[in-house]
Image (cartoon, rainbow, N blue to C red; front, top):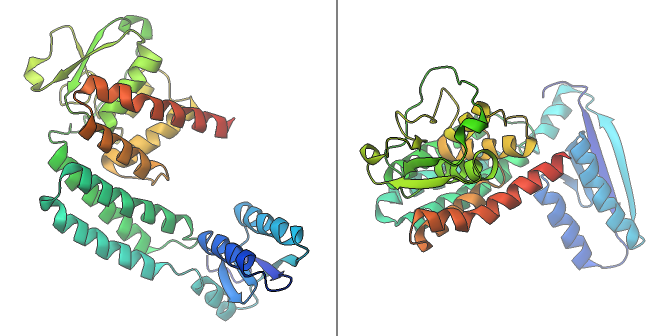
Length: 319
């Protein structure tokens, strides 16, 4: 964003008396939203609908206590002013610190149990997502951290969820759900994100009477069982799509906005990609469930309410 005529929003606040509690609450809210501080009580954000909503929310709270507040729109008058304003939103130091922590996390993985490793990575992933959400002028530093995060995720998955499928390069044929009712489905045991979400998807939207077989060895798959999420399975990674996304496409479910958003979340956790705010939380839930539940039937049962809730939230938000 180097346009000298780029529009900005300015929030000018004046709080009555010595209400330090309110002053601190507003400061923290605006800092979390990524607003730049020009001087005490004066904040700036790039002009967007989201920025306007952030400033409007704080304006309502300030007026509720008889404070004065103004929201103004202005444009940069020169390259120097534009560069100075953009500089207020430089997240490079934040991303450098996160990159350092990811390196340290990667080096420590060999000494950690799965639950501890995934919790440590989930904590950093939450901070990466938070930093990215306020990185209004993304550059190479964010890209480097996202790449490093995907790399550490791959290392964790390779250690604790080995034998992940390789993507096939073929078209994804459309399937008739009627041909897949009351069937037995098979995948590798000790499920992780793509497998457990795919099993949830199968039972909720494809085959409500589905039975599952959790394989210690792929060679043990029952002859008539439908395989998913392993090399050679009927449903597995194709091109850039993970198994969950392949199932959506195969059964014509990709138009469901809730499932599509879940697909983005599963994709990010399985192979990296576009960050999703809820990803770290789901990873922690599944990681904890894997440690607590005695088998994959119990794991699927345990995780299902969380996936139901996410799906409902995604559909509601889009509705």
